[in-house]
Image (cartoon, rainbow, N blue to C red; front, side, top):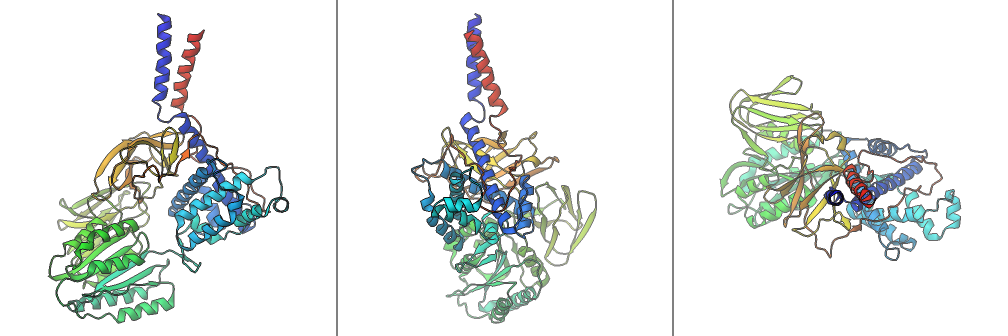
Length: 627
């Protein structure tokens, strides 16, 4: 009988071990991922040390970001830190994928010239994602080509081949602007001429310039002139385009920090003239697509019209394009003279824009347009404009909230806004629009009440939280999800894990991008410094939302901007779970560097305690059985 119980105990240990949230191979992969992240960041530290001429000290992930940013003369911000973490993860995965290939299939020193050329071509075309993949391959190649016993840069250049020297030179000669782009330290793009420019938010005006829009165009002219003559701390871009029938104007883009371009914008604004149009419907969807063709990500587009669109068939194309760019489309509608303007309203609702039935209210129009220049309306389910029936609006700000901006739509209202510390401020709205903005919101509960009954509002409290998702099965990992209907383990990396409460329910929500509805919700657990759970891949385009509680007890929801779709097996790039990881090794440089490696909250630490205990029980039981 004792023998039977021992066998049962052994079987129980084995069964429980198989139920653990991460298998041994997946834990090994998590460890390899962290090692590769260290290799990527150490290479960055060495390159920046070469640029500034002094060693850069490593530390926590946040300290490393701040140190590198300072070394490159860039202001460190919370947004920049999130972009930095996303970039490191993308590069690390690309490096690990390359290093895990069989030696006969992976890149070698013979490929350095082609890889370097491809890297710069991708940058010149502003293809940052693919440029990071190539950079990751070069980091892998650098790690594999290092000889630990070899000393100085000069000795290695003398001893190694020409290709090795090209690899060394690639990293030694990287400019600070390129590093800032690749690692997301600041928003940058690179034009085809190879010149680096700061990516700035864009505000696009899509103007109906048909004959019935005379008074409205005068308001637009006044507004843009006011903008042009306003000195701004951060550079922005304006887009101006028109639509009529049967033609649409050519969109033009103007930078606020270029005097010549500002003068050209003023001239284009002065040339706006209300004329033509013929029948009522106009080509507004074509005009909006023209604006989107020049718009930067996370920007805003304002349509100004008084008539229905003639090209309604392009509505879905406009919505899809705007979602890809994470652009919000807003409608300023002036006394519709004819037709059905619902398709424009559909654009606003689908892209989290707003609809205002006024153009000639200059002050309200100016307040909104100015807000749109420095702010992106957060994508939420159910649209952005809501109505308050009980005179009060209540919402919660978490530690992840970057800022609070509320656009109120009401007439002759006074709104009293109470912040978490109990202080109150008032906002009076005379005609149609009022904007409340808090760029350093307090964590806690906000209360907004009206003294005049119902009001409409568009609330945005964008959250800052990096989510890097990988998909694991028993044999491999990938940053691309498997085919629809497949159940897979997700491994989620975030640099802000320490600020998330793991004592409360933490869920990963899958949101259908087209309908905005939740398709599934799964609980997440912590394993080896990563958040993990099992999901089934839907057969439609979707986004991830993280829902939980911060360490101060405030609930939060964070929607990832990335659009996700299933991947066919023949298109999917995978990394074996039992794979070697590139070890951090110094970039060839004459500048000495510290030997310490950064360690973060998300660092993998081998087997999870649950897995260890499971196998311990099984092993002890088996030993007792044998004895």
